Image (cartoon, rainbow, N blue to C red; front, side, top):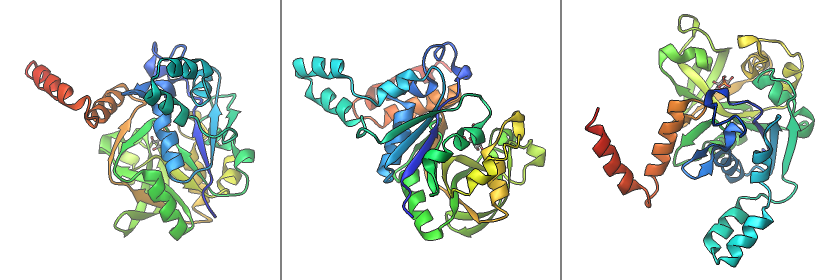
Length: 290
Ligand code: G1P
């Protein structure tokens, strides 16, 4: 049961980033010099994923073009002898046929977006990556989760501890620790108020799910914010199958949030030898002002 397919819900309008996202997909905003979505797609391929399923919506053409060849740019780079750049843009284009697009034609929530991919996924376990969650780590999260899945043979979500007053932004767990980095989920609730949250253990945007999830998503039950929530379908799945949580090691940035996005840019830029020194002296300089 190899995890071959990964679903990327990318239909969101990105209203938090208006005006930047007025005519551009929010997933195309760059962290340093790469669009947010490319980090997640690279993570998926590195984990052995063979097929990328984008659940898109209107206004996502740039995203489709990004993963397609651009003969014009390739030709120009070739003529100018810019071989490094040429290689870079050729490498980012997956082999033809490995990306599939479907549309979520109504904004009915994350669960609905995943359900839109049901026929493309079929009857096999699959991964879900929420590109907004950018994770800086030595061990790519999805690769680790695939290994855990091979052993546990059950659905698994990436998890982390969050500030108690932030529970209404996440799927929150009631869980039992069973290994250093693995919990067994007992219950889950989407976006509870802090006073109703069973813990401060939150789901982060990496999942491996068994196809049975589609049965529960099919019911189209609305939950938090009036949307069809993936967390609710997972909660229903819990009655039939175990679900585990994987505590990854690393720093997660919420690129769907303006501050999180700026932090991600800084953190990833500081990892780059060509930018690091200049940025550090700049940070030291402006730090004195505050
Ligand atoms: C989604 C999920 C939520 C999860 C979060 C992680 O929420 O519904 O359970 O904790 O992603 O980023 P969203 O950020 O789409 O509101």
